[in-house]
Amino acid sequence: MLDIRNNHLIIDDVDTVELSEQFGTPLYVTDKTKLKDNFQAYRSAFPKADIYYAAKANWDLTILKILAEEGAGADVFSEGELYIATLAKIQTDKILFNGNSKTDSEIEFAIKSGVKISVDSLDELNTISKAAVKNDCEANIAFRINPDVSPDTHPKISTGLKTSKFGILESEVICAYKKACDLPNVNPIGIHCHIGSQILDISVYEEATLKMMDIAQKVSSFVELKFIDLGGGLGINYKKEEKIPTPKDLADIILPIFEEKTELIGISPKLILEPGRSIVGDTTILLSRVNTVKKAYKNFVGIDAGFNLLMRPVMYDSYHEVMVANKADEKVEDTYTIAGPICESGDIIGSDRKLPKIEKGDLIAVLDTGAYGFSMSSQYNGRPRCAEVVVCKGKANLVRDKETFEDLVAKFN
Ligand code: LLP
Image 1: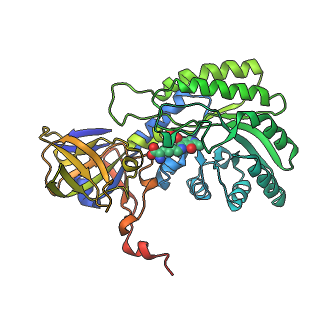
Image 2: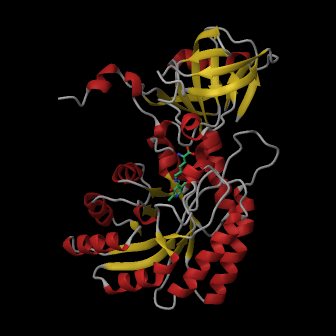
């Protein structure tokens, strides 16, 4: 939880100014208590469902371990995410391997690991069957369905549109499951969809759930469906609006349809959800030091973190609240544009923000950076990635060291 004490921003009882002095900046700081609370909010909203945390949102090993201890499964989108989820001791029978363009080696790795696979095309289904035969094992699969629904979100993160690259079309579904029944060493046991991300108007889940249950009804006339996975996508409160939907609100939409339809069809599949952002997004802040302040066309504040560490503003024009962490209680004095150190004019973390007077050496906190922050970072401009700290009830733990220049060159021959 964020607090203000003695004019400083506090995260789970730890002073951010002290963190910046102890560990340097830039620095990602994650609140463990909040992380656990966010996961448990899903647990209590969906008591009978399995929650497969979407590892792409943030695959920090410590974060995955904390979620594994809370009982999370995982949605993984690459061999690397599968590797790290297993390392974090997420049970393999609670992992779904996703991907629209998996390599043969990823498919073999997934089959041998015994995780469920979400199949994105008929072509891929053939590859999976061959790999399962070759390795003398069975592949438990679901098809990723393209449900053709349009959530109100950024087009780049809307994944269930008819035009999207993900999944198979509704018209192909029956043929796909029939083929899966016929092929050797493949067991179709589930159906899967994911309609998009940062969804705040959750009424679209009604349409998606109804479509998926309709498909479940058709498929279950010849397949025993063990799970129905409705993906993730619930948005978080980046703009600090008064009310935004919670996991409970999502459950109020999904569960009545799911329960009524499963009973009607006479099946008892497990419901799976794959939230990423709504588990980690608001657990984390990015601390960054002010290098310089200048008055040009606007008041530009140059900080030591840019889109190398937080890609979202430049990639999706996304808004992240910014605070001056060492002046957290001071009154607004001017309008500032917070610029990163990367040599591109798009490297702006926040535009035209009303903030207390900012000077060189001040500490900027960029809020809600737990999802798709570090996990989308890069070494652009030859900048080593920063350290990560997890705080819990007044204590701070360094969970990832800052990269060094040696790390930058480690793989050159
Ligand atoms: N399941 C699947 C198959 C997904 O592709 C995703 C996200 C999720 C679950 C989790 O969605 P969430 O609950 O986090 O919304 N980089 C973008 C977001 C990309 C989301 C990709 N897929 C951003 O920073 O907004």
